[in-house]
Amino acid sequence: MNLLLLATFIILHHVFIGYSSPANPSTSDDHQLHIRKLQEFKSSFWQTKPVSSSRLYGVSLYGADPTGKTDSTDAILRAISDAVSEERVGLLMDGITNHGGVQISLEGGIYKISRPMKFPVAGVGNIVISGGTLKASQNFSTNGYLIDLTTFSSSSSNKNYNYEYITLKDIMLDCNYRGGGIRVLNSLRTSIDNCYITHFTTNGILVQGGHETYIRNSFLGQHITAGGDSHERDFSGIAINLAGNDNAVTDVVIFSAGIGIMVSGQANVITGVHCYNKATGFGGTGIYLKLPGLTQTRIVNSYFDYTGIVAEDPVQLHVSGCFFLGDAFIVLKSVHGVVKGVNIVDNMFSGSNRGIDIVQLDQKAGVFNNIDQVVVNNNNVRGMNLKATIAKLAMKGNGTLWSVDFNRILVFPRHIKFVQYTLMTQSDVFPNYVLRNISNNKVLIESNVAVEGTISVTVDQGLSI
Image (cartoon, rainbow, N blue to C red; front, side, top):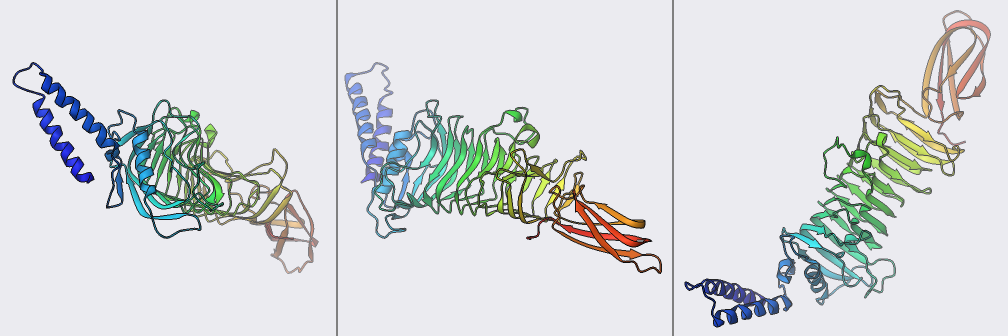
């Protein structure tokens, strides 16, 4: 029925267009009558509910303007409403309806919207929105999100999750400096794939609560740039804000924002991310772990390009296989003085020979007084200062006292938990020697007789007591 209406509309449109240009330029009453009938037909056509046997809802059938010249908010919302209104069988999580992978297609258009794109009710799942551009209009709310997986109306009996298995893919979101791109609230198994999100002022993507939102193969930036932007000092906003648990960010580029990724949930994994959002020297941060509390965050195989990592009171934090360029470094920030179960291993750091430490402490709020199982080791450095929690030094001497200073390399001040030492002499004398003192990250060893030799000392700051 819908295809017949469309064909009829196209035929009548061409007939009337042909009729509207008669040889005689004067306009007759019949001509005006036909024009009015055409306009009435077009109006009734858009009000007819399209029914898609293919389960693909193209928004242009609802009157959305793919040129972006007129507002398409109502048309797209009608398409979304129809897509979730059909009867479906089977459930996902209890209280969430399986809609079978129904697709809402943006058909490669650019659509101006003045309100967030929302589902009319909660409790829906297995739905795909894809293939086009959404741009906020000038009257879009500065607190809103172009795609907002939240609702105050619920048909779901599930108290924990609003939605399940919603896929947003191949979409460009232009926030037009009017709020954020995507908000996901208390949803399960949401997928954001191959999206380009720009011109946000709050968050490019905000994940609150819920479980297992996966963000992959996407590009986010407040301003469209490829680095070296003259306005970089003014970059603001957060590209990805993870205020929930068990999420993953994989193969994502963040090219401009005040903070690349903010993490305040647990057990999130970040892999293959390239952050050059705002240089540390301009006040930017690549990844900010804002807890404090149980972190359980894994950051692996990522690229920090002139911007680094800040971790507040990290507990179970793993950073490995990453590349830090342009004096980018890692900051451990004391809030309650706790740092436990931290691995910063097997990374590469490259700098400009300005004496920047690869791992630094921010103890303005208080010192770290609870340090346990912290390993900073096996990192390689070029043009920066190597810092570690495990260090080995050897020094030659001739006498009875050897003082070995580890302050240059150890991460934590006045904190050595383990010492192992060996004296190798170059004479026939076999002296007794003993560890006399450990203070201020210096190790003092004394022998009972004066000898010429080399003392070798290994220290560890991260072992449990």
